Image (cartoon, rainbow, N blue to C red; front, top):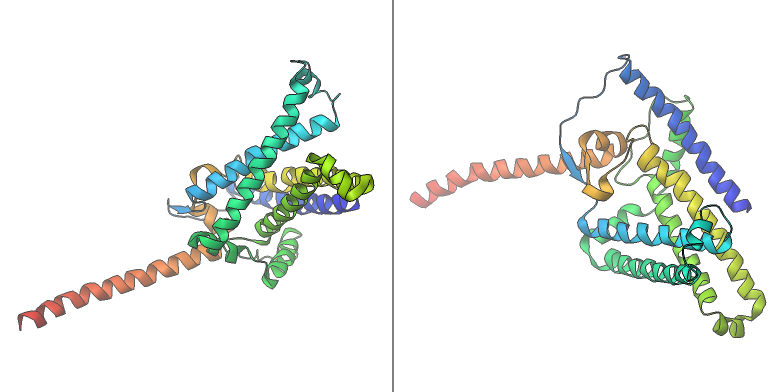
Length: 286
């Protein structure tokens, strides 16, 4: 409970400050008191098709697990009763759906492990998601910026501390929920192995981790992909796979600078090559 209050409370305060700062900026744009930066109409790849499919599997399984799990814990809730009253078999169906969703999430997680260890783009994804000391400096810098203590907003690379913290929290939550869920699912086996006491411990952890994960998604993830004033009403990268140049300038300027640098180097190499071709032709004729 302390972990939930501290983590979710910290997320809420962080996002509230972020919302206020970004809302003020958007209001200045709309009232003509500040000029929007001019950017080209170009799209940049954010999520490949493979990554979007992984994300879809995670979203569908997570939502199903949340709904079917809390329906068991709160069978008389206003949103559960109408579903429960549809048929006498709905309670049994709830259990089946919960387990199917759990299998889908674990399968998606196992595939993701393969992806980050054996697929080149996945390996790069893992390298970019590794925490760095700079992430702490960025978090402090954002706090100062949102509080008006600094005029400069830190520049983020492909993944900021926001996305990294969410990713590793997801890894933690998936491991905890998978282990405790397996213990609860195969109760007869684990009651003999662990005794009733530790089975109850697994049940308690499973329940409160479910609250922590659900609230984190609502307060943290939903804010940055939906309610963030810079991208409202929705960041469509999960569907389209791309970000606009404006979104890249705002959220991932260091990555954008690196892309431009590579493109310039490639252009210079190509230009050098095109100048050398006529020279080679002249040598051949001579």
